Image (cartoon, rainbow, N blue to C red):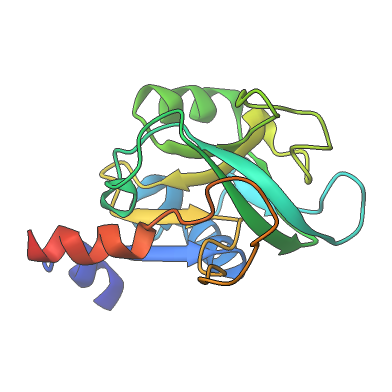
Length: 178
C-alpha cells in the first residue's frame, strides 16, 4: 500500500539496478507500474545464457528517454557501463515486448560496436530478449536496468573509450526541481 501511495499519489520515482531490477520485475512494478501477483508467463530476469556470472564493461544504447530518469539522454546515444551479474537475462512474452516497445518502455538495450541492438553474446552478455537491458513502467517513473550506471567516477575508466555517465540520478533530481 505504501509503494502504491508513493507512486500514485506522491508522484514518486523508483529505480532498481541489477538486483534492484530483479526486485522491481518480480513485484511487477516494471513493466506494469504496480505490484501484481506473478503469473506463469510474467516477465522475469533469469540465468545468463552462458550459465555463469559476467563482469565486464558493455555498451548500451538509449532506446527511449520517456522516463524522467533518462531526461538527460537522447535515443540512440551509446554508453559504456559495467555489468556484474549471473542472472540478468530478461525474458518476456512476445506480445508484452511488442506493447512495451510501442509504449516506449524499452529504455535501454545492449548494443554492438555500430550502436545497434545485438543478440551477439559479445555485446549482449546475458542473452536478453530483444537485447533489453532496462525497462520502465508505463508512465516511465519506475525504471529497472541491469548495468551499473551508479559505478561512475571521475577517475574510473580513464583508458576506456566511450561515454560512461548516463546522468540518471541527475534526471531524477531535475524531475522534482524543474
